[in-house]
Length: 81
Image 1 (cartoon, rainbow, N blue to C red):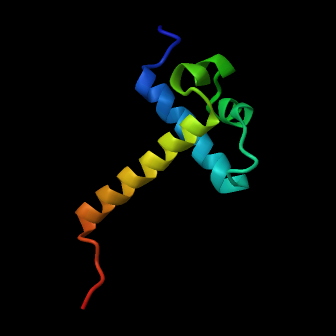
Image 2 (cartoon, rainbow, N blue to C red; image 1 turned 120 degrees about the horizontal axis):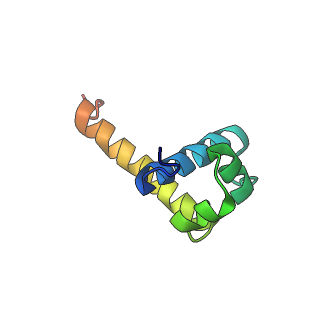
């Protein structure tokens, strides 16, 4: 049985862990250690996917934008009269 997960899955888990911590404690207190502990990976794994915390935050922002756009396309956006 393989010990490693596909890169995209691991990257998503890192983003999930970061999102969880940001929602819990805010961006200012977020650390790479928080993210790696939350994802259950070594710090080196973080750096395989992101160059630094700012890089991860950019990816997290992109993820939110993609979710928003997707929800707007599915729901029609609502509003207006």
